[in-house]
Image 1: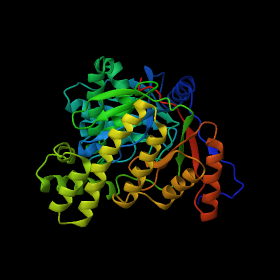
Image 2: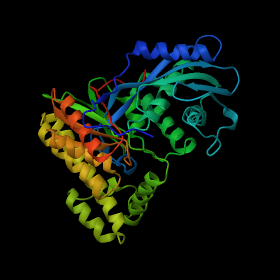
Image 3: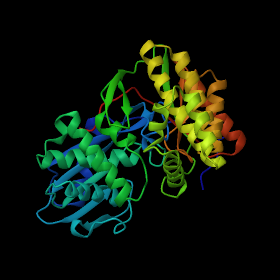
Image 4: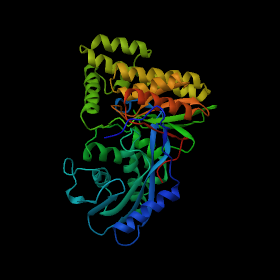
Length: 408
């Protein structure tokens, strides 16, 4: 049982490892588990999505950054089709045979990695078995894409060791991201969109990734919020995307798009003169109130993301913060994916001086982010700790990060 904090409990900070620290940890774990040394070590970042939530599977827009916190993998190919995996965050060795990997055939954390190899095979690549050791400073279950970081670290490693050449340019990294999405959707059984994998593989150091999920195109916008810093709050609330709630939201959106006669809700928005008209016309055509609210969130969130991208370009961080606030309210009221821990973290951060705050990731637990004046992260974090203590919530944890680089 997790002990709630007291009002005097200091904030718990989660630092990122250096690349050298991560490399040493996984190399040591590999050698202690398997005979010999790995052929190479690889890593991939977690992410925070600045704005654009639950838009990816609706053909919308998203604006994530890669974190400095990364998952590291030490990797060696085998001559057979056997997969053997060890994780510093797990017990024992996870094993499977690639010949037997298929949708519904494997379970556990290793399914995310075996799924990457399976999806590469499905794409026509000759992928043998392998041994891998994994360690990570991306908080698990925090809504910061620990699963995508896991997938991307292996994908970039297999690409390198097999000389596939996909990691050399953005088109190839886009293909690797699609492989990772198939792994997560079809083998691990989580019905996520593609934003997480794109951020982990296609981000650029110092830039936010402006992702158009309709056609997969990206642009890179400098993320240097003058006079501000980005505080990430891991609420420690239980977080899962394969318990049916995420999939039900996606199914509702798919059904609504079909009822509106469009391939995705993005198509509906793009055909309208503005977001308000798109929402009004959609609500007039849909009979179910839940579907109306879900669609309203998606259409307005895509529009908010466009506006946030413009505010970022203009350096208008006050406007950016206001859009973050509106995003969270839409996710709370219309999409219903927040929990009390997220709402309290967001509300307290605003009261403590944040320009804007919102949940990030799929919701149902996980993390919140706050754009706070420079030098105030400690004070905002302390206020959140105190508020959690008053309510008997488990102690949260915190991290800060600049926009970091992709899987490598």
